[in-house]
Length: 86
Image 1 (cartoon, helix red, strand yellow):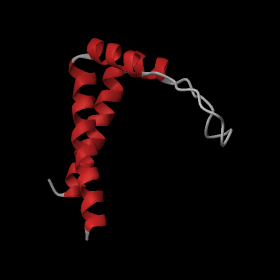
Image 2 (tube, one colour):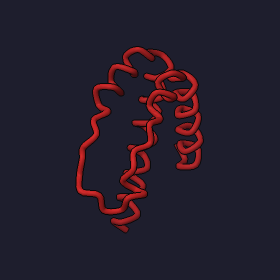
Image 3 (tube, one colour):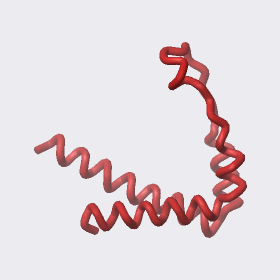
């Protein structure tokens, strides 16, 4: 029972936070860009799995089309909210 409750709580938090971030990307793209660049810090650790530990540079694409990706994030959040029964 507790395990299911924890997963549902995590799912609700994920939906709400992704909807907020998507809305920020749509309505305040400059603020979203500044926040994303500030929080985009790479921490170097000892490689465990080379494939998983490799870096994929997609930030430039995401930040170039902030409103498009923000809309996609909000749409995905709405779908998950419907599936979770909001």
